[in-house]
Length: 103
Image (tube, rainbow, N blue to C red):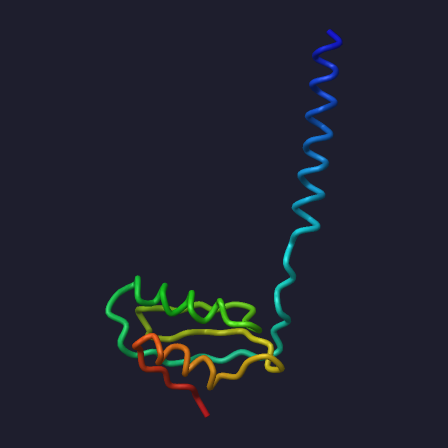
């Protein structure tokens, strides 16, 4: 009986520690104060869209990025103090696609 109680206490302590570690290690996302839709040409498949999305998401200051192969558009939310739409176009173009940023 004591063994069961000890194991139960250890489980509870483990859950509390795991939750605390997860909470403390969370990386804050950048604040998005702007958004833009970039036209992306040259994507041949859904995997291309995924590649473009990953490239843009990994840029400093990007809050979110969603690339749709069907429409050829990338919707990006970002912190304008850290990154500009021109930087998105450059990053996408460097990966072999054509990016058009609205003026």
